[in-house]
Amino acid sequence: MSKWKFTVEAQSPGNPRQTWITGFSERQLALLLSKGHKEKLAKARLAEEVLEHPESIIKGWGRDKADSWIYVGAPPHDYRSDSIETPPPKGKRSLVFVLPDGTIDDWVWRDARTDEPGLPDGMKGNVVWPVN
Amino acid sequence: MASELNQFLRDRVDGKNLPFTPYCDIGKDADVLTVFYKPDPYYSKRLTDHVTLYLALEPPHGIVGCRIKGIAGLLLDLPNYIAVDHGGIKLSLIFLSFRGGTEDEQIKAAFNELAKAAGDLELSSAA
Image 1 (spheres, each protein chain N blue to C red):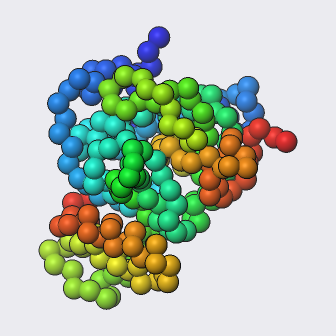
Image 2 (cartoon, rainbow over the protein chains, first blue to last red; image 1 turned 180 degrees about the vertical axis):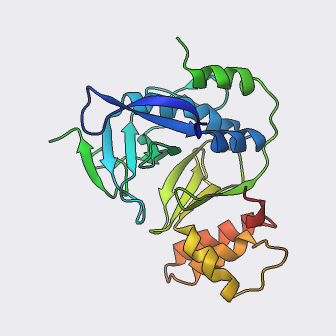
């Protein structure tokens, strides 16, 4: 049985014309439901959008999970709860953390860098897409 | 066409009365501890190499939760330093262990706030 409840065809880190399969784990969605974390559940929609249409993709970040991927996006809206769209927070980027096996581990807003607004503040790792 | 995720959220979440409960959760695959105290909309801000804060999007940007990387090693070491009752570890002790390693007053204050908000939450409640 798959460990993922839902899959997302994310843009391939190495080739924007290709996709690879990522997924939300059954365990994490069950946890969020059981704890009533509607805000985080609503933002899973945002994660799906960023994975399909990222602004950039970063490899590595965590000290021990250097092979993780971070998808960075600038979606034109936010979801604060339920499916009601609101404007995105100013000066922020939407980040989606993906483990090497494709499991979507976290999704969150973070401040954008002031010198390079397309990238998140405090970034560690290497931008693998777009290639300069 | 709505994705399966969207359909799931429409069926199980949108418009439903789902009371929020503070929680902590250990993600073994990612080796992280995730903590949420409040259901408020939030953004993330790195506090240290190991700890990321989740702060409210609305001013005054209070702490909503946090995420700690590399938690497995810490949990292995903790029983060497403290007595663990009933298999549970007070979440506030995790923050104490990080607080001791910094001289930065702002970081200390953040750990103090995290520990205060932790209250009686225990890691044993993590699934």
